[in-house]
Length: 271
Length: 297
Image (cartoon, rainbow over all chains, first blue to last red; front, side, top):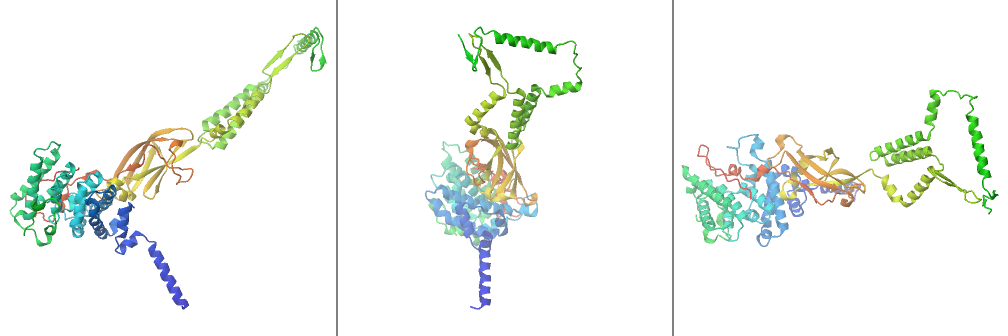
């Protein structure tokens, strides 16, 4: 080997060593989700700056992590599974908060602002399984998982994914807090639900209302949320061209392929 | 009966030496009280030197040293306190003098017994000597009452899902019972050094304040501008934990457990703004949408 070649190889080796020492930021730049997977699994701190620098890449990784957590939270979930959901959902909440249009544009009035770009991006990356993981967490016994999942789910839910919380609402052993959370999530879509979603929301409204008629539990808050759903569904009747009269657009028909677990035939997506 | 004292044969009657001594004392007193030889008048300077030469003066000075040692103990270095105490005791003992604190003359039979009890410095030195040997460890502790420190570790509340990540955006101001304490950041924790005295318990309230340290416009809605929390602490040798901060700075492991603080803004725990992110929103000019129920379950 010539001395010049040896020098060049040594130089490359030094560069590789430097690259290895640059840590998560470098890994992120290399389009890897390994750092986020490790951080969500181990509880290692995800630097806030990392969530600012390449938040789209982070969202893609975090959506993938939520997708992969579905089997862990589906059947007899352990506390560790909820911790991972909290870490992932917490990071998503931070990204959403960092990209708040009101903050970016310096606007005090939130009316008329564009959609949060982080929420739009998450909707692009999130699968129905990822949304299902959040739905499981939003109705879990773990308070922190419940709150974090609700705050993400409530913001990212739309006509494309609302079938998931509707399906969970048909689970007969759902808890009071979990039911209230998922009803709140569904209520977000109610004023602008397209035909299929409108009918499914209306159906779950009637199902839950009938279920709670003779309930001996304290479900006053749930009944208030149901009342809110009714008002928001009826709001569409005040519009000249309400979404409920139009079938779901082609790009929002992900729920057509959703296989319900509890709703059965009560969740319909006929086109 | 004949008795012997110090090897000297005494008069059986036992009166002769006492009588001689008494008569000698009278003559000595008479010499000094001779009115024909008037004593020179004492000046103020003489009075001063008499005062500063008296035993009482040295006892007062010694006590003063001890008082200063007691007053500065804790704030001054232990070796300085030790020097003050030693000097104070030495001067105090010099003032008391090593003299008999009691005498006993016996006139029983033919012998005369003169018993003198050692007193003053002699007794005190003897007692101090025994005390040093007997209470060596306690004496060491007595001169080691300088402050001991515990590292009180404050961590972000990881359960809320966001505080751990945004923790680095905050700067901490911590006080214990109103007294500011040194604070250092160590990884994703903040450590406060709170002192207590060895073998003593110090109870108080740790007040923790976290301030967002970036410009206001960079703070997201999820981050609180200022978080404040108080923790009741009981500091003593019994709550000394690991020594990751060095042997002199063990971690606090009190009954209150981990000291956690949440930096999450509470107003973000609601879904009130979710409507803004619906892409199928009707165009402006439509009737107002019924607001979302402010859920927080």
